[in-house]
Amino acid sequence: MAVDTKDRILDVAARMFHEQGFAGTGVATIQRRARVNSGSLYHFFPSKEALLIGVLERHLEELGPKLLERAVAATEDPIERVFALFEVYRERLRISGCTRGCPVGNLALEVGDAKPRVRALIDGYFSVWVDEVRGWLRAAGERLPAALDRRALARLVLSVMEGGVMQARTAKSLEPFDEAVAQLRLYMDELLRQAQPGLEEREGERAIPARLYAHVVERPSVPTEPAEADEPEWRAW
Image 1 (cartoon, one colour):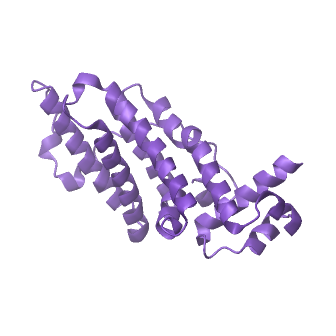
Image 2 (image 1 turned 90 degrees about the horizontal axis):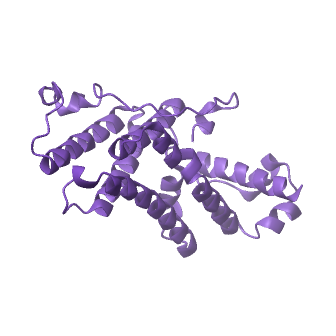
């Protein structure tokens, strides 16, 4: 089946670009692992860059169901959805042993500058991500300060996620990720207090040093995906 063949090629390419990077992955290896001949591969993807574009388009298609919609399903509170989204990424870091990280973020660092069409797709992916988070922040309404630039805050959320994932991978530990999210939580709580001066502080919250805060706040529960027996560290992402 032509569709099955194309999907198999994209699955293998996405996995290998994530594991080995774009430059470190050979087309011949993708062909062999996808169990297709060169004619079939080049029929769908006439160049390696075309294959990369196909992979990025796949990531964009899956951004909603694999990431954003899971945060929406976790809670009706629009601000808590931000932290539910962090929990989705944290769980993937945990399962993978803090390896690989965000596949689109990895590609942005490796090839974004050199290939304009690829850069545009990566920028589009992050724009969809930011727009969704901004929508949650807008839905918070008067709970946040009226003058707050909610798109800028959504970009900060993205920066905390990508930076936290990168540092967790470097340290091979969840601690940098947890600390980054904890600081964002403190900032968000301060915004809530500014908008609602009479808001009570959560009991005992400020008595806890910020460096420990990540380990004591209640994390939102997010729907879990079925475990895959085949290399769960890859399937996590």
